[in-house]
Image: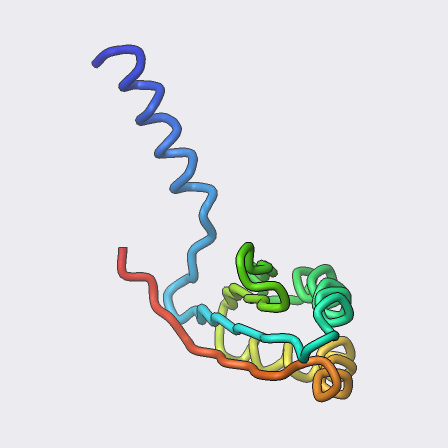
Amino acid sequence: MGKARKKAAGKAKRAARAAPRAPKGGIRLIVALRARTGQETALEKELRTLVAPTRAERGCIAYDLLGSSDQPGLFLFHEIWRSLEHLKRHWETPHMKRFGQRKVALVASRESSFWKQIA
């Protein structure tokens, strides 16, 4: 195997290890939120406050916040939880309850769906 091929294979292995995976029985959730007109910055600020405390929660494997590159005010959470029970506990935390009170003023639409990794 050539040097370049070995290097590429090593990069692929490291990338595969770096990607968090849901354990058997784990939960993968995608949540898309669109800000109300004029509330884009406020929603982003509010969503950013959820990241650190959520990542510290028991059962949280990944909790990533993404902002659209081409649609300002569109945000996406990619979440991986050890179990549905852990996710349900997450919804009852003080930081999520606080966001629940604020989201009516900030969020125009919200879509969520559960996913399974197939490859």
